[in-house]
Length: 140
Image 1 (tube, one colour):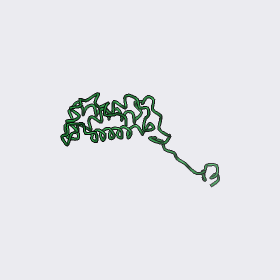
Image 2 (tube, rainbow, N blue to C red):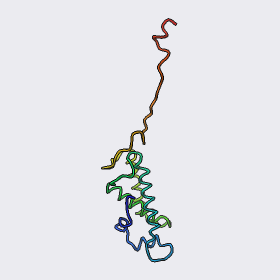
Image 3 (cartoon, rainbow, N blue to C red):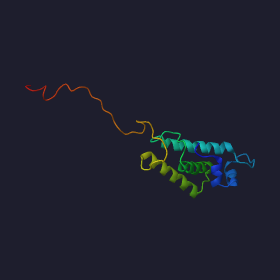
Image 4 (cartoon, rainbow, N blue to C red):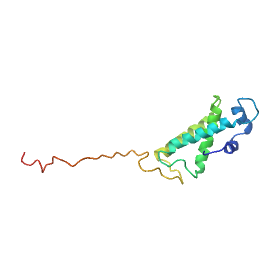
């Protein structure tokens, strides 16, 4: 997990979270919904970071926590098709940032590089010893 419910509460009013998560009208935050959004945000982040870095990233830089919060809030609000434009824009910006990290355009400070071979576009070609050469074909 790259963020917590408290991180989300720092960015979103509790009454608003209740409005988006309280399917049973209990008057409380449905933590099953928020936990699912937080877990989903983490999985989405790791799917991008794993191209370049060992995941989970620990300790995670602050930017990863911020991205997780933006993604989780979007997931919470969009589950009912009610995500405001500002929240959707933050989500899209988070995805663009993660794509830049995955492509190597942005370096994630403090993260350990993924083991060699993961995310590599390199091709290895192995050949056997050459049978016919100019030297061996002289006179033919």
